[in-house]
Amino acid sequence: MGLLEQNLNENKMTLIVSLPENRFDLAKAAIQAGVDSIKLHVNVHHRASGNVFEAVESYEEVFRGIRDEFSGPLGIVPGGSFEDIRKSEMERLLALGFNFYSIYAHDMPSWMLGLDKIEKTFAISSDYSLTSICNVKHLGITALEASIIPGEEYGTPLTFKDVIAYNWLTQHVDVPVLVPSQRKLVPSDIPILAKAGVKAIMLGAIVIGNTEESIQQAISSFRNAIDSL
Image 1 (cartoon, rainbow, N blue to C red):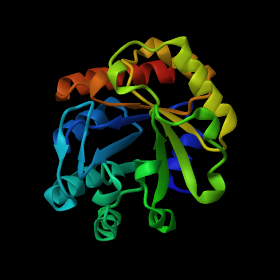
Image 2: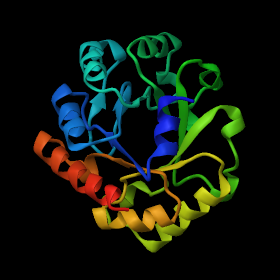
Image 3: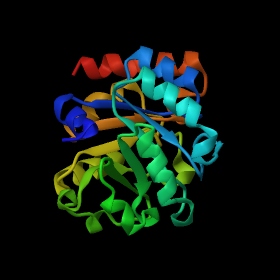
Image 4: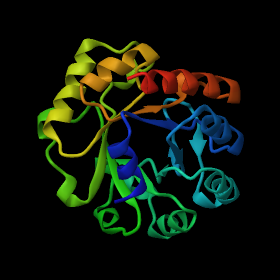
């Protein structure tokens, strides 16, 4: 069992941070606030944060520093499109200690399913039909990221319609469902998301901001809400 899968199985709800920048100080703030897992990015323009992430070689020192500081699951978005993802970079990411990758299903080349020593998570977008999603554990998948909110609705409050959609997914797939903060999630959303079967929330720029102080404050508040379940 991989580190991420173990975390998802053992926790009431896993608290993941998707950092708006690949910076050691931001990662350290998240670690000190009690995050369970950290996700970083390369080769992608990140819509929610507005940042452009470069190739792996630009961040090797930062990645090593974060890995040395953090013993929990460390994840990577390896690219923003099919053409951005290269086997040589995936090998370097494995050597740097990443435990899982996260990528939209339509951007994932089939060879990535055959990678050893790294857990595989995938995302679906608002363009996917929920009824097309099925059991995937037998394909080597660890978790599903439900990135189903349309881009024009980013930063708006969670609705019951969203909860119904997340609940449908948790009932129809055989891997844990992760919910990213495309909506402006608040700590009081945690109990209803837990009742809907959500196994992890992934807090990104919309909720945590882009400073050490905002990250520490946001993660601490969600940490308290999860620990109170």
